[in-house]
Length: 123
Image 1 (cartoon, rainbow, N blue to C red):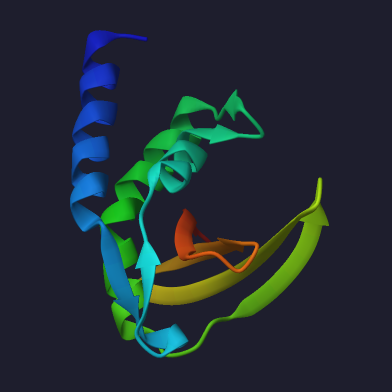
Image 2 (cartoon, one colour; image 1 turned 90 degrees about the horizontal axis):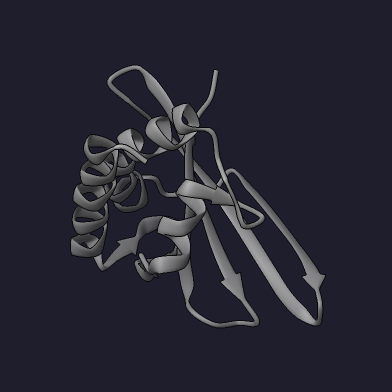
């Protein structure tokens, strides 16, 4: 990993940590937490590093996540399932910022806190 890339990741990680938690309109102002799992998922999928272009795209979208969570009143999709005895619930909240369509994924494990899980753009 080159020095500039490592510095970029560290800077985004600092910005991510500052978010902390956001009141989410789609959940009646319930808090959504930005924890290490969400940041790690931006860089990895199933424990393997994502290609750098995917990491970059997601990290560049990250500053829009708080706005979408604060301003969008409905989630777009919901799914749930069990893996190794853990129940996972996933909600997608979609919004458009400056003409860019963005999806934010919220995850909840075993009725714990709702947490930011991912962000991506879509057509």
